[in-house]
Image (cartoon, rainbow, N blue to C red; front, side):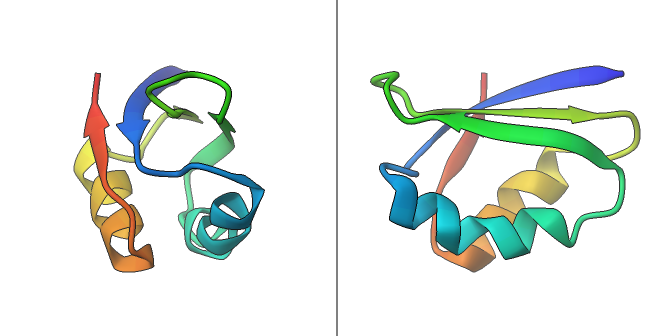
Length: 69
């Protein structure tokens, strides 16, 4: 299992609600979470098959930015 971490523009619970259907549609993500208390709003994704580019592109479609850290 790979753990990918991204700095994002996801700021609050409403933002999480917006990205949830987008991230949940990606086959291969075991779990994901966003630490909105962190200054960098860290998205953590557990996956074995999904590329970082697929996640950043999905978030871009949802209206958010993410950078792999």
